[in-house]
Structure formats: structure tokens, C-alpha cells
Length: 79
Length: 145
Image 1 (cartoon, rainbow over the protein chains, first blue to last red):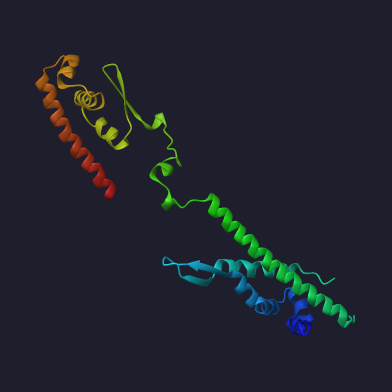
Image 2 (image 1 turned 60 degrees about the vertical axis):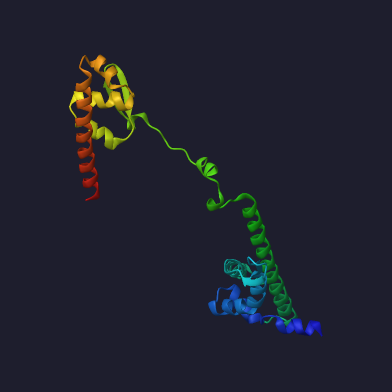
């Protein structure tokens, strides 16, 4: 069951190929695909003066992750 | 070139894995970097005045000072504005000002050195100060314009 779910979550082959060749549309699609993961990684916990817990997306980290992902997409070689 | 679908599936899995690892690794790097900064960096606003003072040195060049030679004394004047104003005074008046304010000599001592009466020195000093005041005011006015 879990395997099937994972399979549906994968990006189609042609998108991967196009993205690694530098197609802007395809790269945007990859970014959209990983958007949720990026946001969850860049969500940080903050405590305010009265000690309440806040969750907040660290925009710097989000940007950094996106940039890194793009460089790695372009590095990706289909063996 | 026809590629088998199992090959494509492998690539898709590889790509997904690489992307996830990249994101995770980059996030880890970011937090490591934040830890590093917390450990070694201090905010200027949180530093004490003394710590701030240790951060810089001012270069001190003797050529930037203005040297006046008066009765065998070498007197350094560090403020350019004041030095320029002093140069506008007559020699006697300059001598009196320099000796009384830079060497901190009393009027009587200066009178002895210059072979003059004490009251003359006093008069010189009073007039020189008024002149200096007007010269300095003129030069600061010019700067404003």
C-alpha cells in the first residue's frame, strides 16, 4: 500500500529529463513537487516573550533550499 | 532510443532520493551554520562600551599635527581647525595662547619668559581669544555653506 502511494508521488520521467536539461517549466514543476517538503524543513519553532510556541517559515532557509535544489537538478545526469 | 520503463522508474526513484537528500542536507548545513554564528558572533547592540572600544584603533600620524615652535618649546596642535585659526594670529598673541592653554603656564610665568608685564599678557590673551572665536566661527560658517 505504502509502496503504491510512493510511486504516485514520483515525478514523471520526462519532467526529470527536461528539468536536468534546464527547461524552466520542468524545473518549476520539480520545485512545486518538493514545495511541501521544503516548507516543512524550513519551519522553525519560536518562543515569544511570554513563552508561547510559534511555528514560522524561515524565508531565508526556504530560499536557500530552493536554490540548492535547482543547482542539484541541473547537476543531475540521467545515467 | 527506446528506454525500458524499469529504467525510467529507477531514474525517477534516484531523482526523488537525490532531491530529498539535498534538501535535508542543506537544511542541516543551515542549522549548523546558525549554531556556529550563535557561538562565535555577538551583536553590536549587546556589546559593552569597553568591548566596542577594543575593536578599532585610530591611526595617529605626526604629519597631521601642526607643530608650533614657541620660545624653545615644540607644541603640537592636533585640531586642524584650531591650528589654522592660530596661524591667523600675530606671533605674540599666538605665543601667549599656546603657552597658556597648551603648556598650561600662568600669566606671570609667561610674562617672565617674554620679558613683558603680567597685565600685558592678560590683555593679549583676552583679545586673542576674542579673535580666535571670530575666526573659528567664520570657518565653521563657511563649512556649513
